[in-house]
Each structure stands twice: as structure tokens, then as C-alpha cells.
Image (cartoon, rainbow, N blue to C red; front, side):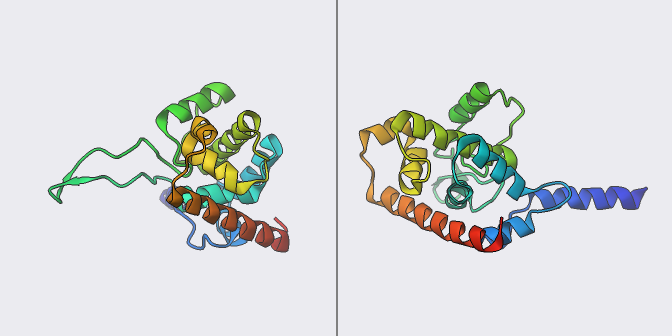
Length: 189
């Protein structure tokens, strides 16, 4: 009985860990294809639901959290040793803000969705990119502009005032999406 409990606990613990090889989409899916999770299945289901390519969904998560379930923005430190508040409420794989996450759950009826669950997070990214497609007219395969709208918000995207560093990050996201697309094609995911 204790052995079965230990095995189950170890399997569940493995579900929460970040993949170690995150520059290759095929390797990510290979690492996260198990009894309790199947990231490839979740990603493909999100692509079917929202029409956003898996490569763009995965690139957004790569740039936002490096596939870390409990990622948060770093705290500022007062006098070098006193922690202060975090600069935002961003959390989880998708680095979704509290208010945006609540809107997502309300709009989709996914009340039990958690930001540190990969399946829920990738659905959120797909939903948000789909909102950018509907509201801002961004093509669903335009990784660069989808990332700009993701980071700055749809209203921020409408204003079109992006810093140079945000443009660089959007270029990085687009490059990762292109690399992931080629990798996924070669490995058959």
C-alpha cells in the first residue's frame, strides 16, 4: 500500500516540474507525455478550439514563463534585503494577470481553471490570442503581433506604442514559434 502511494506521489510531483529541454517543442512534448498529463494533446485541442497554431501557443508560454508552473515576476527589494510587492499579479505558465484570468474563467465557464496547470494555461493563451484576432484583426498565425497584443493588452495594442524591448521580445516569440513549427512538423506532433 505504501509503495503504491509513493509511486502515485512521485508521478504527481513529476507533473508539476518544468521540462528540462525547452528549446525543442518535440522534446517538451516527449518529456510531458505521461499517464497524468499529455501536453501535446492539450495543445492540439486548444489549436482546434481557437485556431491558433500550437507553435505560437507554445512560444508564448516559452517567452512568458519558460514552462515554469509557478512563475511570478521578481520582487523588488528595499535596502537590498526587505522584499516588497511584486510589480504585477502575473502568475503561472501564461503569466496571466488576476483580472484577465478572472475574465477568461467567466467568459469560458472554466471556473476551476488554474494558472499553474498547463492544460488550463495553454487554453488561456489560445483564448487570449483569439480575442486579439477578433478585436484587433490580428491573423491567428501572426506570432509577432499576437505577442505584442498579449503583453500590452488589446487596448495597448490599439494604441500601438511599444517599447523597443517589447518589440525585441515579440521578435523572439515569433522566432521561437517558427522554430517550434519546423520541429513539430519534423517529429509528427
